Structure formats: C-alpha cells, structure tokens
Image (cartoon, rainbow, N blue to C red; front, side, top):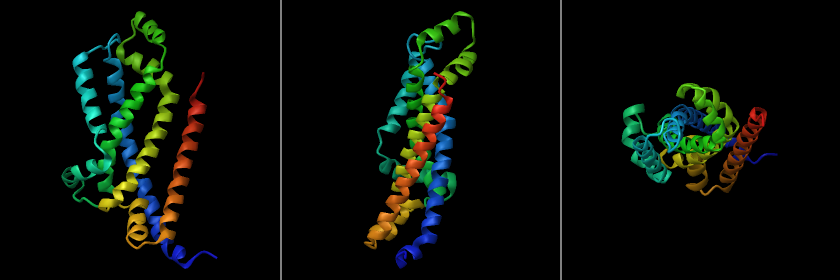
Length: 221
C-alpha cells in the first residue's frame, strides 16, 4: 500500500512533472535555436579559420562568458523585470522559461564551439581549397561532422536545465522544484522531498539514455 500522503500528492506531482517538461522543453529549444549559430560564430571567427574576425570573436565571447559567470539563482532574480515584460508575469513555468532560456543559450553555444573544434582542421582546409562558400562549409562539413558531439551537448544542456528548473521553484516557477520547496521544505515532509528527488533522478537518467542512443546512431566514425 502506498502512503496516504503519497496518494494525496499524486495530482500535484503529475502537474509539477509536466510543468518541468514544459519549462525545459521551451528553454532547450531556444538554447538550440540561438546557441547553435552563436557557437558556430565563435568557431569560424577564430584565428586561422575562414571567417577570422578578432573583434566579433571577442565581443560574442565576452557576452557568452558574462552570462555564464552569473549563478543561475542570481540571474533568475535579475531577469524578473524582463520576464514581466515578455510574459506579463513573474511566476509560473512560462515565466521561468525566460531565465532558463537566457542561461541555456551561452551554455549550449560553448558546447557547439567545443564540438566544432574536434573536427580535423585538414577537412576544413580541403573544403576551403576547392572554393566552397562559408555557408556550404558550415552546412555540409561542420555541422554533419560535429553532429554526434552536438547531440551529446543537447543532452548535457537538457540535464543542466532540469537542475536549473528546480531552482526556479524558489521564485514560484512551478515544476518539481517548486513542489519540493512548498511541500517538502516548508512543511518538513521528507516523503515529498524524497519523491521529488526520485522523479528528477529518473528524468535525468531518461534524458541521458535518449541522448546517448541518438549520438551512437548519428556517429558514423
């Protein structure tokens, strides 16, 4: 038999779980859409590459490093005015997605840059020598070659966003973290706290397994 407190919290746990998926899903999509071109830009403007540009490299690199250097809980509070402008509120999973997205973009951009650095420079040089345009090099060489590493990067980013989403509960962001704080911490209910921890562990394991699976499929080496 399940404890009564567990049965009572099942509807709340179900709602919180899907709120976490919602937050992570939105922020991961934004991180990929915005972070991928940023990561590519950081790579191709580096010294010795086909779009070398020290100024752009320094400016974009500084912006990425600046956001990454701010602890998420501080970033979460600092972005409350922006969140209010964008979503019309500062509480709930949609509002929390704003801060999660801002945190995820530079994180994923650096992962993309690192993934591209693993590509053999000889392959890039050979493509440049036959007169390929920058867009063709990016589309037909860089992204296909780095695809398995980028998929692993998506996995790492998703897991990090799950952890960040738990912190969003501190400011009423919803999700499993909010449930843990309201029912587990404030009410000193160890059953709720343990249950939320187990749910988060299972979610992270599922994300890791899925990411590893697709990375293996896409790795042609």
